[in-house]
Image (tube, rainbow over all chains, first blue to last red; front, side, top):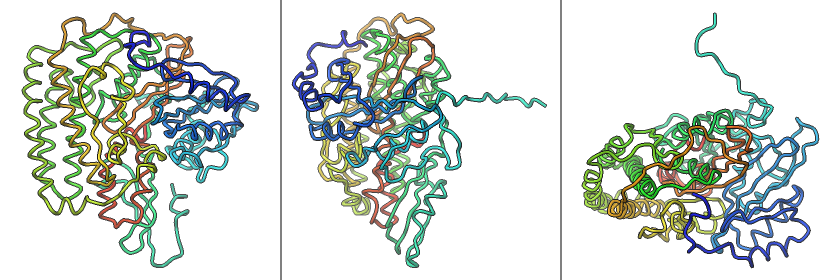
Length: 168
Length: 375
């Protein structure tokens, strides 16, 4: 279902919330757009993440729904999906981490001090994507065993197809 | 893993560490709780997960959009249709497919039947974990009737792959509507029976009331969703607050409780089953004629785009963050936000300080499925 085909009765993303975010985070947001009703996407630099998240938290965005790490050719992104129980909007914050040396782990500040739910999300992103969260209380692997090498969701991590029959 | 044990090892001779799981009937799969005990009291609990990790997010990047659909069944294997729905919904949003009216109604019927099946399984196994073994059989008996209905439509009992891009995979078979109405209409009287068994049982109430209290503010901060959150008094149901599909056309209420304890979590699910029955009845009444599937191409190649789609699964907020690069036929990145994963991460906060039998009851009450946690 596309955004157009949904009934028009639902409220649009309130522009005053957009304005408030814009005015409070002036100069920090590098790009912003309203994806569809109640969905706002903002792009920021990785070093501003705690400031942006604290501002959003103070505005009533109290539910950190998800953190996902994404790898592009030239950059990593740590993407935060934040929902507000009071004003019922979903803000997607994309923190851009430039990729300087391909195999080096990019670093970003942890937001566990704002939302405790970030704890396991950050551990998972560290485990699978290899993004280091500075200030995390216990940044260890969560899904893979401790002695696992590499980060499976990196594009450089290739899956090996094992033949189902015995080759001998 | 061993680092976890090392970390919480203590020199205090009165304390001891035991592992609950990974193979233990009360963990409902393969989860391990590294528990530090002082006498019978659990001072510190550290869940260890990953025993069922199959790398589903990586598999998604190596399969095309259609090939990945059956794998979504394997996430939360007691509510497969919900997983199909969240993934299909994300792809449809990127592609801009319109779903026919009849398909939307069939989807709602199947999603709610699935919710009933999942909650009935919870009621049964929760009874077993508390020690009320009789109810286990009752829960499975009613779940069986719902699985019969699902089997009638999909030919499968557990992994359905039923919801398809642009609609559903098959039309409803002949006689389904009558059969479904018959089964669903009979369910509330069974729920009355369950309530009688549970709420007249002093042992059950004694074991559940006031155990594992989760406060509203903590629950929100720790990302708890679904019935566990509603048991703390937050009226949050994605079906109602951020409606997807055609949920905004149905009349049902969001069930909440104030206490936030184990009993409240149980009550919310019992009440939700009645609401599901109402939704199914309304959908059966208004089921229109028409196509069950839109005309979608066999090979999907979505344009460049990024979407975060959410549904209310029986366990909470299930979401998919899907990125398509517009070049390949595979998803560029697919991240699954699993509700049980987040609910489990909050578990130590309200279970620590309880005695061991209460930890088991607490653990049963958050209703986790390991396939979804480990992915």
